[in-house]
Image 1 (spheres, rainbow, N blue to C red):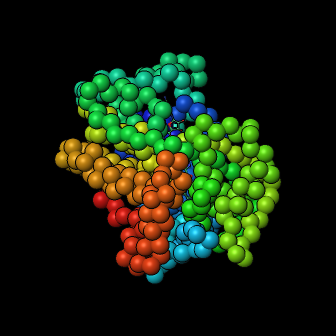
Image 2 (image 1 turned 90 degrees about the horizontal axis):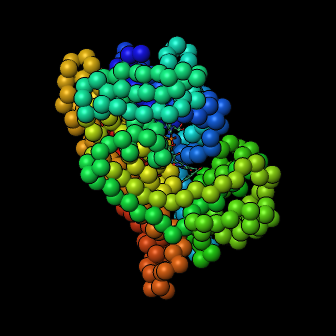
Image 3 (image 1 turned 90 degrees about the vertical axis):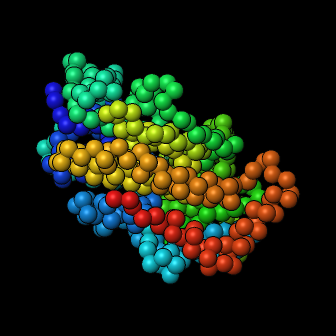
Length: 390
Ligand code: RFL
Ligand code: PHB
């Protein structure tokens, strides 16, 4: 088999890249380790920056998102028993859209299949070869048969645990990493949201986040230990802890059946450069952010927007300049988003090692935000999404 771009991974990065390339007349094959059912039902992120929304709408992928997505014009920061609302509309003229990542993935898979373009699920033993030459190859097993795909370029969109990043010779990549001394216990519950916008809570018992997926489905998170035992959390204990952390006069959570639960580790991670030879890394394969800024999916979308434009210049005009600049262009945004995600995480979580002094400084930061239009605007413009470099 032969294609222009071999894409490893059918997450948001791989599928969106495939679609953006198809719109530009560039052929690609997407090779995914998991089943269609698995990737279409994987519950992860839920907040789309306005930049991501614009990208999806511009690529003809907005129909269901505009029908079912919830436009949010602000978020609440809850601390010291009160709320400060960050008003995105007033501060930036923008909004974010609450729309599940798995629905974005479903929409992208539907578009790929409607275009009759190759998307191979349940591919085993995927490996990349000859990435330093100009004919890199992908090998894998599919439907019981060994396959070889010769490409001009390979896009490594296979997430943090994929095979593409480790295929780059050791010593080439610089790795920047930070792990946090906590994780998030997340639930999906059939209940009405208690607030009509997201609530980020800084509480002495630990961070909590009240989010949603629809007017009938909430997504709620609690800061927990990185090695937390999910079995130790009965439904009653989860609701009681959520109630204790989100307590505020006149506020009550709505409870309902918990339909999904899990623990998400918290990590900041970047590799540089995001390229080696003809292998380009995008999304979680190249960087991880802690979820406090709601940026993982958005950063993946921003990477592939840059990569699609660079590949268009390459295949249409033989121009390698944009491909050569791919890593630097993406990393400029990646580091700004890392900063924001780290800052939100630091400001909102309980750190066991904090002294009473550091705890007071954390509260002073929140008080400052609540009293300063300049500081609130800085949060808002990062949350709704920085300008895309394409
Ligand atoms: P993905 O979505 O991980 O997709 C990578 C795809 O590659 C496949 N794959 C392989 N395919 C072929 N061969 C191999 N050897 C392969 N190895 C892996 C995988 O099966 C998968 O389909 O990466 P992508 O496309 O870069 O997208 C990034 C986003 O998914 C990610 O940044 C966010 O979901 C992060 N994230 C969250 N972000 C938020 O903004 N808010 C959240 O609430 C939030 N929750 C989460 C998350 C990430 C989680 N992970 C990764 C554990 C919750 C979880 C549990
Ligand atoms: C979510 O709804 O899953 C969500 C929202 C905001 C975040 C993280 C996760 O910062």
